[in-house]
Image 1 (tube, rainbow, N blue to C red):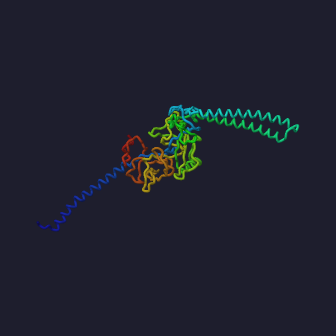
Image 2 (cartoon, helix red, strand yellow):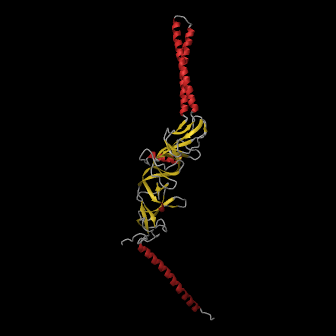
Length: 408
């Protein structure tokens, strides 16, 4: 291969540099062209939502259990054999309705014996009273000793006391006889009978014969943190929350997810705090005319705490988390540039965050289009349309995807 001279080498090097220079110049031209296009299109377009204060109803959803309004365990008050059951299990019974009959013959005999004792005591009154009258006349003329007269007076008083005692015994025997028919103490739905005809029952037994529960109305017991209840009371006292009535309203969601059609009212919160869980029991009262709610059902109670005026709500889709987990949003400032805002948002209401600090009425919160943008960049803000297609991140202001182009 022939050697190249110095002049030939310089010529080759110059020829190799020409294409490289041409390529570098092409890239610079493309970049300049893109910058010119972006400058002509204007700043990127973002969709914003101007937040405004509004009145919202604050609710708390808590798990709970239904409890019968009244519960009565039916027990015998006398001893004996059950001779009849007078109800159908599961039926509604009225207060005073006969439920069971116990063999009454021994108690009928006790009543008859008590009546005879009363008659005997009354006969003794007549004899002692006559003796007292005779001795009264004789003592006036000193025909008998004063002590004999006083003994006659005492005997007459004892005879009258005996009558009263025997009358009380008769009343007790009559009460026991009446108790051989066991009656419903309250009105409600009666459960299954654990005692059959022919069973021997006693007044001291611990097992009930059956149970009656009043289910209309019905209670719902839920447990809420005592700290949350304290905060709620403080907010109401400070005027941050307002209630339309004296009792808070409660809505109910059943086990299958359906909503109970009738609202209830908050009755009371327990006066003590459970030291193991730090909760207080809250009891609400619900009408139950159709018997849909049964004792022991698991439900979710939605307590209406009150109404908060001048509340600021921000959709959850607009809120992000920083590296520390704090909620934040991007806001378009008065200068048209993006500004980050850190929020204080203690709770959600539906699909929105309730913001208590970090935003002011009228602030324009970025909803779409700022994914690839940085704080401090100028943008073009357009009203957010929830029904439009999502805006393309960083789309130029001329015609953002999902928004109508300006001037058309």
